[in-house]
Image (cartoon, rainbow, N blue to C red):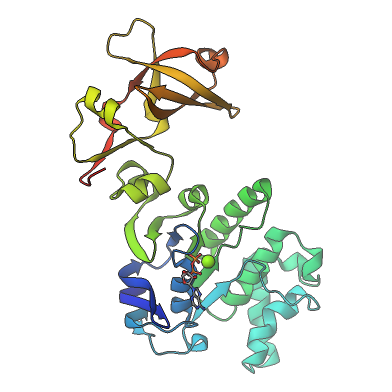
Length: 332
Ligand SMILES: Nc1ncnc2c1ncn2[C@@H]1O[C@H](COP(=O)(O)OP(=O)(O)O)[C@@H](O)[C@H]1O
Ligand SMILES: [Mg+2]
């Protein structure tokens, strides 16, 4: 278990992380999600012991590690390029930390053997990193931390340099490895789809502030702030004119997700008239860019007969699924 208790972090005079408290349970796949520059890497580095905190405490499994150097914290960092030694074999890479710690040869070979077996890379033990796939390299990087007895692994955007297909395979790879090995993962990404698909829980960060902690479903269906609403998934902010027609409260901000804007039959008395301004065919789904009462609104629908022949400039009728409107007590 990792606990951050009122932790703030400064670079010089600049406070990049405002005081935040957070509790990550053992065995969780916990993700820090937020736009570039919001402070995700800084938080990871503070947990790892590479950056000092300005205030607050960090505990790992009940031990206050706030003043511990990185090597005493028992947390491992998995970097984007995996930082494997290219001239060493898999076995040598995994054994490296134990050699530096001056363990006996017998102990090293027993521990390395066990972790290579457990992480499923034993058959590649004699290969160099360049002879391995990305997924196998990832496993070596994880094995290298686990062999040291580390139960907490920190991942800083390990997938962000990969192309879409490999990336998706690697998500499953990391998830499976984490599930099989049972370590606690703290994963950083700015990619909301990656975050939603991988995590047991997530923290959304905005400019150094904790916005909301929750499961993917909680964040998506019940966002606590307009920022979370717009950063986790897509959301239309409902314009003044549409809000007035729907009788939505003034002085608040109202949002609706594109999949909750639906096309209606031509004669539907409750529907609103809209004009198609653009059509994005996405394969299984089609995104419609619409204009309603002079205000933009996006609609996401299955690519069926209803949208097959829609053209720019054409009029359609639409409904907003009112019970799915997300409202926030904040003046627009
Ligand atoms: N070593 C540093 N010195 C000063 N400012 C830094 C340093 N590292 C990061 N920052 C600043 O701290 C903020 C958070 O950075 P970072 O944690 O890297 O964000 P993220 O990982 O979410 O992209 C940014 O404004 C960044 O410019
Ligand atoms: Mg970063």
